[in-house]
Every structure is written in C-alpha cells, then in structure tokens.
Amino acid sequence: MPESTDTSARIDAGLFGEWLMQMRASLRGDGGTDVPCGECRGCCVSSYYIPVRPEDVQALARIPEQVLVTAQGQPPGHFMMTYREDGTCPMLRQGNCSIYEHRPQTCRDYDCRIFAAAGIQAGGADKPVINRRVSEWLFRYASTEDRLAHDAVLAAAAFIRDQRSAFPGGRGPTAPTGIAVLAIKAYAVFLDPNLTNANAADIVQAIIAESRRFDSGEAQ
Image 1 (cartoon, one colour):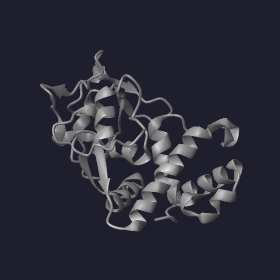
Image 2 (tube, helix red, strand yellow):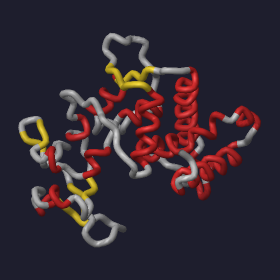
Image 3 (cartoon, rainbow, N blue to C red):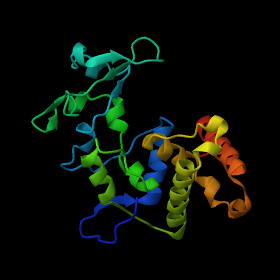
Image 4 (cartoon, helix red, strand yellow):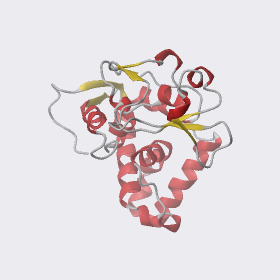
C-alpha cells in the first residue's frame, strides 16, 4: 500500500514505538490498544464475522441467537456473529454500536492501524470504508529506533505476502490480518543486518522461530 505524501488528509495514529508495544501486548493477551476511532465505523460495516467467546457473557446476553453460528474448530460455547446482507454488524443501530459497553472482546481488541503499520489494506472491495481509514493513518516517531522498527514491520509484511511459497507446505499467511499479525510478531528478524545475505528459506525459518519466541513469551 503506497504511502501518501499528502498529510492534510491524514489521521494521527500516534507514536509508532508506543503503539507497537501496546499491539504486541494485545496479541499476547496482556492488554489492548486505545484506538482513536472518532466517527469511523469501518470495522462495523466491513462484512466481518465476529468471534464471540464464552467469557463474553454480557455480549452473549444481548446478541440475538439467530445471528450467531457455531465457530468451527472451536470448543463448545464459541460462536461467530454473522453480518447483514449489506455487510453491517447486526448490532449496529443508527450508525452506532447498540451494545458498545458490552461488546465482545474481539471488537475491543480490533485495531485497524495494524494494517497501516504493515503497509497493506484490510481487505478487498468488501471493505472500502476500513481501507480508506487504513490509508489515512499516519504514525509519528519519537526516535530513529522507532522508524527502523516500522521499516522492519513493513519489510516483514512484504516478505510474508510475497514469499508465501517459501513457507512450509507453501502455506504462508494470505489473509491481511494473518500477514500483519505475523509481521508484528517477527519484525525483529528484519532488524538483523545479516538478513541481506540470507535466502528465502532461511528467512522463513527465522520468522517462524521468532514468532514462536513471541508466542512463548520469550520475545517482549
């Protein structure tokens, strides 16, 4: 996703280093991010299936059963909330979430800045509103290290997107969320100056190892 040079229509995404730390904590389940959504309802109108977990007790008490389907491959009690024919969330009323204070954790954790950080769109033609917001985000940098970290995230996302066949079984992530999440987890690989001499297979192995370190809690 090319970065626009027109900053007049951009929206402050915050300091990249702070956001990256918060996003990585969120991916570990240790916290969340405070998204400055403003009037944007992009994620509410973009044909998303919303995971609803058993611990989303307040949300489950308010979501009609007819818009919930069993989440395939998940334990009993896990559901997916479907969307309307026009792609909007069934809980959206008059342009706002009708259960905002009791919304599922998935909605609380969603942060479309992850796509801006990775330099990719959130999806295709079914997500025009959220793609527009993604293109408007503009991060700031408190240090050279923060700028280098963002460059590494961008490089990681580009590699994951373009080198899918180099992953075991040719099964690298293809969905935007999967690409962006893996880039955030493994961006440190692309801070290694020796990377320029590595082949694709070696880089993939380094990405997998770094992702596992992140998931195990070794990589902060």
